[in-house]
Image (cartoon, rainbow, N blue to C red; front, side):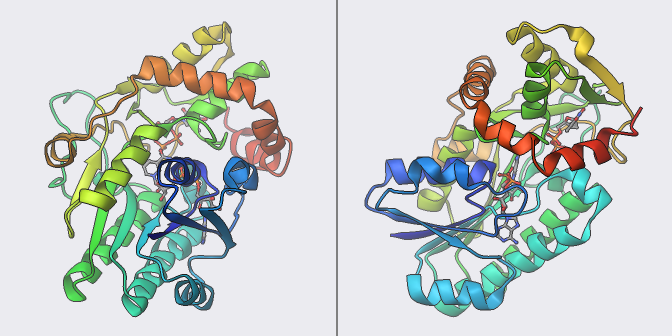
Amino acid sequence: MNIIVTGGAGFIGGNFCHYMTNKYPEDNILCIDKLTYAGNMETLEPIMDKPNFRFFKADIADRNAIYKIFEEEKPDIVVNFAAESHVDRSISDPEIFLRTNIIGTSVMLDACRKYGIKRYHQVSTDEVYGDLPLDRTDLFFTEETPIHTSSPYSASKASADLLVQAYARTYKMPCTISRCSNNYGPYHFPEKLIPLIIANALNDKEIPVYGKGENVRDWLYVEDHCIAIDKIIRDGKEGEVYNIGGHNEKTNLEVVKTVLSLLDKSEDLIHYVTDRPGHDMRYAIDPTKIHNDLGWLPATPFKEGIRKTIDWYLNHREWWENIISGEYQNYYDKMYGNRG
Ligand code: NAD
Ligand code: TYD
């Protein structure tokens, strides 16, 4: 089978390319990535020479480039990870989120429609459901929870989901959507909370915690997300949405303290800064459907996953030091310089 993976030079797409090339030597994994600031060829370096892996530098919103790849490669399956993915960036500059996340998705869907496909899978996020109150720990996101977005990022991802559902119904396209909670693990770009804590702590730099640090996220080890998507593209039912998450809710402060303690660093590094505007309070996934229908459950408990992640960052300093010594430094100064 020929499987197109967009956004494969990023965090989750990269882990998915590693997972798929190793697990299915008989399938061809065709990675399409624009290589934005978040795309990194060093993430793909370990699999670049594999005979079942190929890389195409292209923008998913570039219709001609995408159609050309489809015409030549005749993919059976498309998994669309490519996106602008950082909430804070979407607050300072929403437009690129609309172009990549909405227009890009529509171009991918049109290509699938024009050239024919066995399955189109949209990698979405639990953020399309908005947030849950901190004092209602009995509430979880199910696939029936109404879409109710907070940030330009989540609004753009929700728009993409609606387009996928429209193409599935109108053109009877074989589509699935997954909505996953926060991922962590190797190759995570250091603008996001967990790698930012690790990188700053290792450099004895302050850890910026938004507001009081009481917001809750439901953390999932990235490989568990990859396994879930693999199950959905093979056994998931066309037209369905699957929530992915593992009942692993933690406040941001708990996560920061856990990482600091595993690195043997002082909690004095914690620095409370101005809150993110519109900051979602709590995300929590109910994974009953994917468990019952596809037999998926997360395999890596947080205690083990966070240790593995920290070890990876300790053993791959060059990967993240190259990032934080480049253009990223300008972003960091702009984002945190005047935050208090
Ligand atoms: P990321 O920012 O690390 O990677 C995104 C990748 O997409 C990069 O390699 C980038 O170069 C590429 N890209 C961006 N614009 C592109 C374009 N126009 N054309 C082609 N490639 C482009 O993101 P991530 O954290 O790996 O997230 C991947 C997907 O998973 C996203 O769709 C995101 O919404 C979703 N998701 C992420 C999380 C999470 O916790 N990170 C949770 C749930 C869902
Ligand atoms: P993030 O990793 O950006 O993911 P998301 O916003 O998609 O959940 O942030 C995770 C949580 O950590 C979120 O509540 C915001 C918070 N946060 C901080 O407190 N400080 C930081 O420097 C960052 C990047 C995030």
